[in-house]
Image: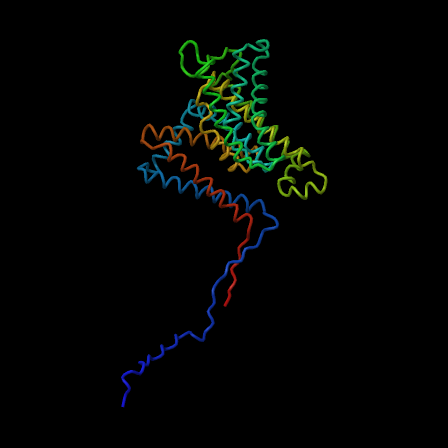
Length: 376
């Protein structure tokens, strides 16, 4: 007789067919590379750029910009005529100086995000020399350039001191000083330095001897040779001189460099002040070489572009020059797409961000070697 209150018996589930078998799976193992062959570096870097280009083309295709039209627009804007090539080179010059300013600091492990503030101070100091007629006419332009460098150095000296003396993060200090410089610029342009002729918020036109002289081809001025000479000088410093070797040692391992007697503090401060000086010179190049005066928006976009150029160029002067021309083409193509396709400029910024992400991701493959190992 069965007990109604007895618990029901649940039959045991049959064992799976492979219950007794050993399960194998592939496990990734990361091994840090001791050396990176130049061929591998070039290959990984090229693949990352091609991937970024493909993603950018696809992104624009979603915005109804066919790839064929995009490539035709690039050829037209950059290489269709001497005038087009001249426009690219005109825009390349300030990009080179901005990229070099950022790269100098990055090579010394100082994350200078205050390029725009240093550009503003450089242009303000250069304009002060022009407006107040300081020095003879034959020396006016060199004095403006020197004042611009000193202004950029002054603006970066505070963050450099705070970092090395108090350990304050330089990203915060340099970034916040951009807003201080911008408000100082607005005060001057809407106040004592407003153009007395047009009453618009920009300074009066510089005199002819206060502008970088034209080269006699298209709209090129001495801004381009100045940028080229600066890049050549920094290439010599970082690739040939002893300073470049010591800077690379300091960047790789500051503690070891300090232990073997490398003047880490001196090299770091020199790089910081040098970055500020070149940042101020960027403002001078735009004001005296392109605008012919100081305007309220001459610096817009150069912080992002300078960081991108330095990053893509691996903080090397040659890479900075090459990617400055690439950025100039991208900027001009973006402007053309805005006019003819209604493409928002934010989309061009997004394409630039895609390049940053792809190149940043390529560092993983240069730093680590991946193995797959079977495990139970």
